[in-house]
Length: 326
Image 1 (spheres, rainbow, N blue to C red):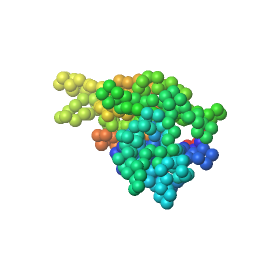
Image 2: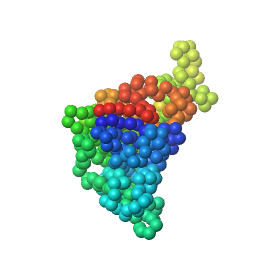
Image 3: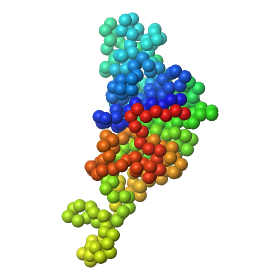
Image 4: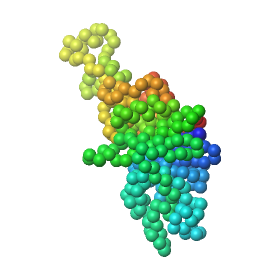
């Protein structure tokens, strides 16, 4: 299976498009998520809408489904005006959790796609839906695909449906596209990390201040954090003035809806589940902010993110246009 990263940015990216992947096996292509920027990402990667046979939908946020309306109209047979995908060969398959596909039409696509000249359309007008029941899997080009429910958003006491996918095949490496998820929530997600040979993990870099290493001795002078002096006399002078060293916490805050780099790396200040080093070594980080691309952190400090990822044991940050084969 060939994997092409056509988008690796977050919802607000202006440089790397919304996170999306094109996978290919034996001449058939699947698009994993189709966000609002994905149509342009496909053009940039030199794919036409007609080159995509299947679309997997992980959840209903616009950076994962906002491009479906464009896709529907770009693939529709305007010469024959069919009312169902079964009347032609124009429509891609649309794969996802059964409840999520039901909600996709009513909550997201209906307003833009329902009104057609001469008739009232529905989801089946533009796509061939392939609903996947809970605890069921689907087959794709010789691969067995499991939908793994992630906790991405809790709206009040209700978990918003969001599903990663794990591709498995005898004699081949397994691949886990986590899509959008909080960090190891629930803890059982670790089992899928262990099963996978290659992991594409969403990773926000929000709220991290990397000016000092995690746990480094620091102090504040005139409102500015500074490294604790290595010179003994300078350190004694500070102590004499009642200034004590404080451990630096790189993790300041996060959105709460994505895995944060500090959590995945296992920083003490993130106070979260520590990943097995063998899991991190299989993990490629995606869905990150634009400032990562220019070597900055959230607070404007210069950071070599590739070096950080290597030091913390990850496979790395994926790059736009990067390709893998398993």
